[in-house]
Structure formats: structure tokens, C-alpha cells
Image (tube, rainbow, N blue to C red; front, top):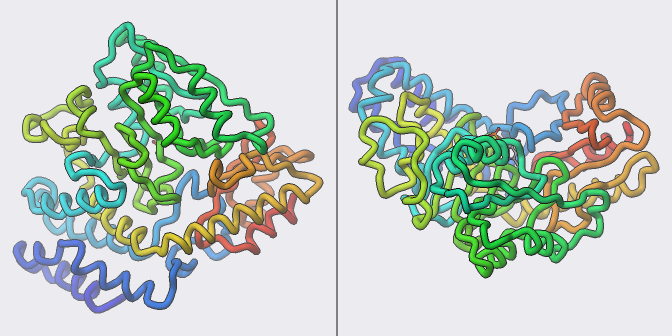
Length: 417
Ligand SMILES: Cc1ncc(COP(=O)(O)O)c(C=O)c1O
């Protein structure tokens, strides 16, 4: 434990006065120093920066990411501080400014304005806000493909019934994704957008086959055909690849920061462009609603919540922003290429995700020719410590490594098949 953190904890346990404690809460001064120490001679974090059991070979970052120790410690510190005066750290406004710092950091991270960022609990919440609150009428249609996650599709399928708008879905064929091109995906959107399409929801990288969709081109096509809004599900991309909301020209982004941003569970980042904000009625409404009128803050839950998590999100973002982006991309591509080569060479497996990195990512699927995926996953976990996601319905396993995954871990997996 470094000196600043030790002092911080000592101060808490000594029951220092409120004003002295408040001096210790700003996140930048305390935390940047720790990160400099962490990364002084390395471009990428290492396994020792995380708490994973050394027997575990973790290839399931797409389900639940790993939290760096330094972020976990920050979370624990905030939680401890909260309990020194529970009311104070929830309702006194003491953490309003630090939370706004986190908002500014999140805005910088995705190239948004501060007023366009809100902190939902997860992706599912963002699409519920949209499906319930966007002013859509009977003539309006919401469009998405078969690979939209339940958290981004069911809210529209359910709420459209009560609210009267329609939902149209279309299939991206997945029998042979190895040869799929950007043009194939764009042609499907082109075919399915109609004069009624008011909102398109795109899974940036779906969780079932790992197709990374060409968002910028889809948005440009949608705009040219008069579609007013585009929402992007970045649950599987934010933190894995850079996200620039202005460049992608989207109106809403939902993500789950516990995956690739490596933040605690149940805190996340959402983006609502200025132009869509006025057309969405907030899902959570409570006291003081008018205060957040002209800002994405109005979509947040202002009941009692875990503010320690919101502050910790700032630390997770600091951690992400300290990683060398080029080195990170190279590492993820290396693991992806290795996995693809091994899957293609192995007589018992078939690579089932797109074969081009630009349409793929660090979440990909491999068909098992001779094994039942769930049985294989159970045995690989029990005997060898591997953690990944099986999909029996498609005879596939989903592998989602992150930058601390080793080549040996990938090679070891293929030796088990
Ligand atoms: C692409 C995608 N969208 C949405 C979700 C839902 O995320 P959450 O359960 O955190 O809301 C997931 C979860 O795995 C996902 O992979």
C-alpha cells in the first residue's frame, strides 16, 4: 500500500473531521500518482495488477470483466469512507463535485459534451429508458438485427405493445461469417430501413457471434434515408476499442462498464446527444427533476444509490486512459489472430466469427465439432481452470480474452479440444 493510501485509511479510522475527509475525496490528486507508479515501466497492465485466482485462465471478459486491484481498492476506500457518515456521503452534496469530475472524464473518454453523459447502472437500463421514454407514435418503427442482446431488444419488444409503435427485426445470416463484408451488412440495413424507421439500434459487437458492425457507415446510410435516431449498444466495445460518439454520429450509447472498462458492477456510462434529450421522457422521476432538465443527468436514478461506485468509475476510466492504446490493440489482435489460426488448424474446431479484424474483436466464437460446448466448458473449468462461455444452441464456445491474457492460455485451450 502506498503512503497516500495508507494516510487516507488512517484518516478515516481516526475519525477525522468531515472537512478534513472531504479534502481527501477528489479523485485526481490521489489517484494519478498511484497509476504513474503502476505503469512507470510498462505499456500494458499485467496479471499482478488484478485479483484473479492464479489457477484461473479467464477468457470471459465479455460476460464479466476483471477489476484492477487499484480500482477495487479505490472502491473499498470509498465504501469505507461512506460508512463513517452514511447520510453525509449520500445526501449532503459532498460528492457532487467529484461526481461531476467523473462525468467530465467520461465525456472526454467518448468525445461527448459533459451534459450528454449520464451514469446508468448498465446497458439494459439505457435501452429501457429509450424504449419507454422516446416519443414515438403509431407510424414509427424501431429497427434492429437478430443479434441485438435481450437487454437492448426486449425493452422495445415489450414497451412497443403498450406505447403503440412498431418494431422490425431482420436477420444477419451467421452460417458463414468468415467471408462477410461491410457491404453485406450495409445491404441488409439498406433493405430493411423504411420511411417509417425512426430509430435504429445497433449492437456494436454482438455477444453471440462477435460481429463488429460498421457503425459509421450504417449511421451515414440511415441519415441519408431520413432515419432520425441511431442508438448503439457498446457493452462489448467500450474499453475494448476507442469510442468517439461524434465520429460515429450516434444519438445514444449504452454500455456496461463492468466488462471492458473494468469498473465495479452496476455502474456505467450512457450518452444521450443534445438533439435526442428533449424527445425522451425520463424513466426515473423524483424530487428536483427540473434541475436536470437540459442535460443527460435527467436520465439518472436520483434515489439512494451507491455513489462510491460512481466515483470508482472515475478511477476505472483513469486506469483505461493510462493504457497505451496502440499496445492494447496489438495485444488483442495478436490473441485474436492466434486463436483464429489455431481454430482453423485444429480438426475439431471451426472459426465462426468474421475473419477480418475490422469486423470482429476480442470476443469470438469457435464451433466444437465433437463436443457439447457446456460439457466441454465444465470439464475445462474443473480440470484446467478455464472460464469461457458455451453456447450449446450453436455448438460454439465464446472466447473473450483481454490484454493480460497470455498466448499460452489460448494455446492451452486448443490443446483441450
Ligand atoms: C452486447 C450486449 N448488450 C447488452 C448486454 C446487457 O448488459 P447488462 O446485463 O449489463 O445490462 C450485454 C451483456 O452481456 C451484451 O453483451
